[in-house]
Length: 237
Image 1 (cartoon, rainbow, N blue to C red):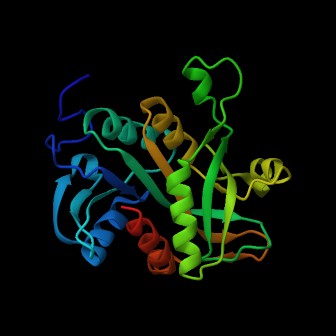
Image 2: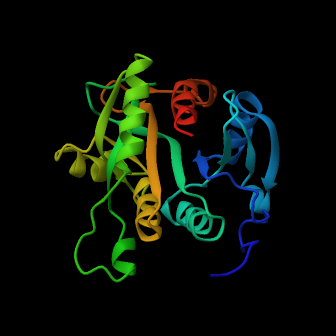
Image 3: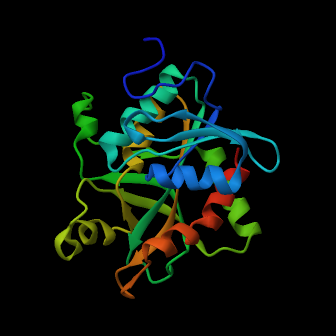
């Protein structure tokens, strides 16, 4: 095991909390720290992948850090956090697209399972297809909190795609016919690292693009529309 700092994180050994919330955008991590935490400090700025450790309104220690876009990026950061900084659980708080008619924009998808069109499991020597899922206790707690708050949601399998510009949503549609709820780009990679490290992980997603209803949140709406999901994630610390 290598010592800290790592090639991608400049933080000292005890700079990270046991729970890390990971939005994709590092600027969103900064916004969360400024609006939901107190007594926080910047613990990483390498490559502008900002990370802040501070306290929730209930005085629970938490870190919020960007993951970047895609499975390759989140794997780098989650690997270093799990294996070198003694982080116990990572909760991805991201966005997704869907065609599920029971969901609307700003609803929440709890990714209990993750599928992918990536071959990253095979790169790890897997002979066959590796199924990956979230931590059960985190999932159960998240669902309980979402229901308590009266937020519309669904729990199920999501597609972590390596392709963002999916022409006519062909890749997503090929998965959706098997009940895949939504498409995003990071969950499978996160769950792979958590499984290998024997740590906990969960992905919460806010619907920002609905392909059936042709609804798409603006950049500002994405920022403000994630508040409910962020509050749910913070309650799991």
